Image 1 (cartoon, helix red, strand yellow):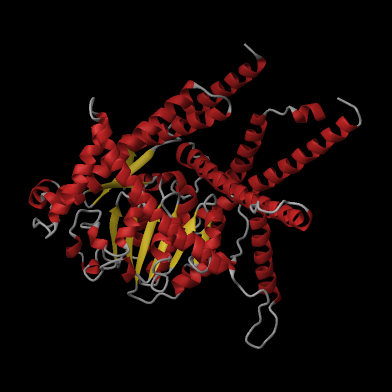
Image 2 (tube, rainbow over the protein chains, first blue to last red; image 1 turned 90 degrees about the horizontal axis):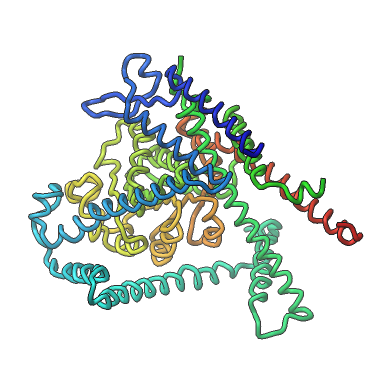
Length: 291
Length: 290
């Protein structure tokens, strides 16, 4: 065994021993719940100490499972391994199943069955809905047919039938996006870019900050656009301006990267908070374990 | 030394970042917050609401971005509830309803127990279809939302009776974790109905560069990632909970700015170190060394 592996195994064993000892003495990773008006809700160790709540096996198991899966994902940072693969597969499977069930109950049942067979849907699944059909209820037969055609892909023969609803989806999506991009991103952005370079207030005084901002916007936009203008060779003045466009783009990418770093660090932070607070009880961020 | 730095195992960098995040988390260190223009714009836009105004609360995020977005969602809900607006919660993500429930439990149930479900706030839940949902509800809310998240007929909910479409909303407040999110609300709701609709949002840091061009014409204000959330939290706490500045429910973003700041300093240090190694290596190469 290599020295590096020996060090890691020793650290892992020490951490496991400490966590086991803390767990056996009831010092970490316990979830609590209480019943309010007949409904079981999450609770805190403080409320359990005061006699309002009690330890919950389900919530405790949830905390330990979440901690295990978090560490399993972090283990990829050391190297790829079977525990990471397991957690990855588990995540994908649970997400897909959850998505399917939610879509069934929030889309298929109210928006298709509820429109085609309102009385039956009301009796079976949604007592709050109306049992009366809309005037144009039959129009919902079209999405039903398209849905069936899409699933035909799974049949051994006639797979080409699924191309028709796919063509419909692609066509409508392309149409929707074309219009929205033209309006929101193309025309509106051009209009937003057209601003006075020199900005004056009501008294006629030059606003230096606003003027500098507008000038910078104009110069940066023109420089970045010139980089993508290939009808003129990028030499001389054009070369200098397009070179400046590269700098503008690089600054933009840098800002985007910095924002991405901020987002990732925030995600890491909340996982650490979970491990240190909910699981290991090293800190009490939400003041749930007073006394 | 140069050879060691050139071949530094990336796992040492992972460990360094982990320590940079872990130590401020354990010591609960956080820097003071000063609000920027974007955060103030969001706050000011919501402050303009009058009691009884309809506000669409589009909570388009899920657990993958909850750490970054839940603090701003709580603070946004608090300000809107304090303004006595009628709150219509919807989501375009399957796990969004749980995020709405968490916000309602953390803010409305605890701080505003007088608000009544169906009269002052309602959870219309999730609908599949991404931007297609926005495209429909912008002209016909009832075309998709026949019930609320609890299965109650929308016609039996008092605050929904006079609502025909999203155009009846005074303001759209969107918290956006990914696709679909603020970009789609700008494209399909605000831009075609710019005279009627206003949108303020909060987004992850990753999304922010794509949304900056929409400010201020198509997007009235934007909370950018955890930093924007921290600034906005400070504004809301100063205005509505000055007696409880450290309330844990409205401290999530400010608290997470501690690890954030230290990790950023470490990264800046690593970038500087990387550049030193680069120029050092070039100098050695030009001088004929190996």
